[in-house]
Image (cartoon, rainbow, N blue to C red; front, top):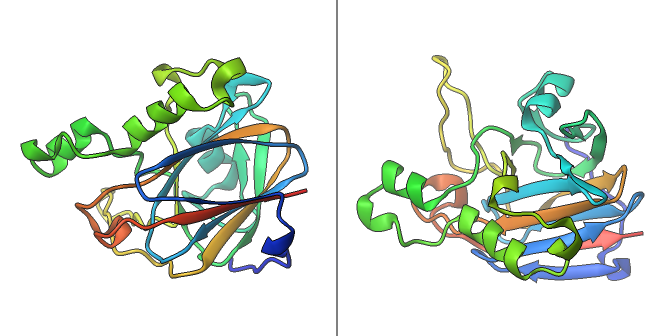
Length: 215
């Protein structure tokens, strides 16, 4: 469901740009609103969420899909944790579809899907791990590679085929489209702004996104 926000970016506490292929990790406190803006369109933003006080309690794709009875996320969707808690609620969405099934690219998947010579390419799994190694947000959480679980792909278009397969299709996002989420508890967000060049999820052209947080 398409829903615009009345929040003013000029009044945001955090207003940062994450370049394609880069990672980003940040604390979002209960009651704050978090926005991901697709600056140039057709970008895929691989995202994970963790309870800031118990990292074992993290975004769970299965529980989220089952609770919404929908594989896609949009306004009103609640992101459910492994312990059945509501981590965040989507409160505004000008794109209308966000993927829960496609997962994150990795050196191994790039090799299998595209070609052996694609293995050294940048990929989302390595971006996640880079953030865990360098972000101060992870000092207390102690997240490691075992904590990189199934993620959300904001703005990514992954239709399900009639025979139950998945397709990576041209995106339905556009420059300036955004999604906003209200934190229902203190959460840590971990983002890989996808560097994928080999399929239409990024229009074969990965681009930056803007990340904002309001009280």
